[in-house]
Length: 267
Image (cartoon, rainbow, N blue to C red; front, side, top):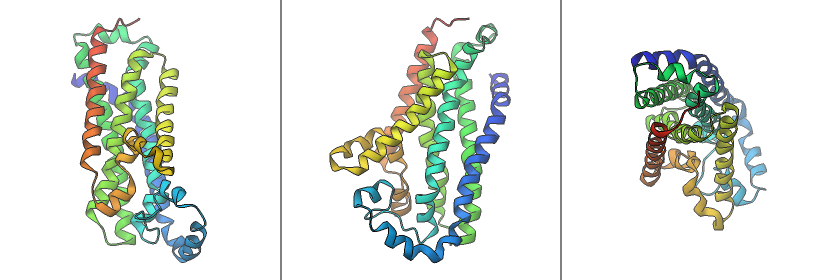
C-alpha cells in the first residue's frame, strides 16, 4: 500500500504544485492589495450602500457581515472565494479522476493484478487525496500568516479557520466526486459532473442568501458550512455544519467502498 501511495502521489504532484500556486497566489494577491484600497473604503461603502440588503448578504457584506476596512473582513469578501471555489474545483477534479483514470487509461488491469486488495487500492488513493489537500491548505496558511502578520495583529483563531476550514469543503467535493467516478468511468464526463457540482452548489449558496423562502437551501451547500462571516465574527464553524460535513464525507466514502468492491471493472 505504501508503494501505491508513493506512486499515486508522484503521479499527481505536478497538478498539486500548479493548483497550489494558483490558489495561494490569488489569496496572497488579494491580501497584499489591501493597503492600496485603504484610502478608498469610505467611497466604496457609499457605493455598496446602493445595493439591496439581500445582495450584500449573499456576498457576506450584509447586517452582521464582514467589515472591509479590516484585513480579515477584506479577505473574507475579496479573497476567500478564490480559496473555496478554486480549491473546491481542484478537490473535485482530484477525487473524480483518481479512480476513473485507471479505467480510462486502461491501467486498471495492471493495478488489480498486483497482490493488493481493492480496499487497499481505494483507501490508498483516498489517503493521497487527503495528503494533497492538506499540503494545499498548509501552503495557503503560510501565505495568510505572512500577510495577516504584516497588515494587522494576528488573530490565531481566524487565521487557522481561514487556513483549514476550506479543507472540509474540499473533502466534501472530493468524496462526492469519488462516488460519482464509480458510476461514470470516462474522465472527461466525471470532471464535467464534478465541476458542475462545485459551481452548482455555489449558485445554491447564493440563492439561499437572496430570499428567506430559499434559506433552507443553506443546509445542502457546503459553502455555507465554512462561510467567512461565521469564521471572522464567531471564530468557529457551527457544530451542526461540522456534523453534516462528517456525515456527507463518511457516507460518500463508505458507499464508494461498497460499490467499488462489487463493481465489474472493464479492462
